[in-house]
Image (cartoon, rainbow, N blue to C red; front, top):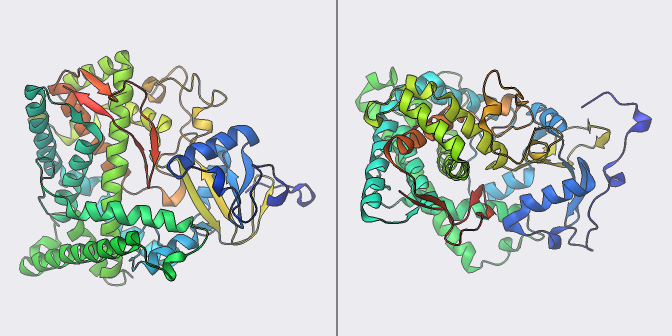
Length: 469
């Protein structure tokens, strides 16, 4: 990544790191549900470049924001997601979407997804977002009236699912009011299985089917059938109403129209893969960021008051929310950025080298694994003033100590930056503006009063957050 005299280059084997166990490597020293914290702890101990091994597979861990940024910007030509993840997904009958696509397939799909998620396209669907926000408002009004404790993470997941189902697929599932979210129930089984199998020492499932594997097979079949049904329904609508192609009513229709353009290089298999990707991106990532942000605001009353004052000044009435009002909520946007700095829902990104490369002063041979730690410099006083504090002002224009935006990269960096970032921030601002304009928050926290623990599943989520309004 940087010009370094060859004689000065180190090999991955030369680097410090935790002592591995025979055969198992460092896996016995890792707790899967807090894998990110284990890696962050080792980064503080061994520095921004160190080595670990999963079984016999050795990898380079990169915890410097400058080096992480350089690695991420060397995609898709220099690095890809680990091939083992794609292999596991293929074994499970997965259909690759933008998340796992590489090379020419990624470039073709990127155009399609960017068309569907471009800010001007998302703005056309804004009334649908307001409808779901009002549904959540009514749900919380009943909870406030009844004095009922709200499972914050669960309610925000339902909010995100309802937005994706309506905005992306044209389906009104209304999980907020108790409807069953069949697709997400299966996603909750499939996605952790991909992560679990990608880190397994031995692929036992190729030889023995355990109960969890049979359950996975059932969920995979149901998930693929549901996705195929969504696509078939959307295609039927487009065939019956050809004028919809000029102005698609939802993101799935927009993706299909983009895929049908001559020379797009995209088919319904790619569309199906991106439906699954959007379900993931539309639920856990957004809802977990929202939950963390509201918790941090409640822990910091001065910031909460500033956010409330901005909402009451700019967007006081949820029924009359406009896209211009959401775009004008600068302090609320800063709160989201600060929450993502402290509590990134994607605290690490594993990659695989596609060619011989150099990271810092370390030689990285082709096919080597590189583990990017996303939360290290972003919570270090060496790079962020009073880094442990929740201080949204650092993100505002004219800040006395402005934030270096390359230190915190919640949406990634380079050309593979998350294409749904505008939609995610819009959802976050809409839900929090509705909350701050409509309710007095009595409490947000865990039942025990302890700080919520971070759970590393497919994304990093808070455990046990409850809210009283």
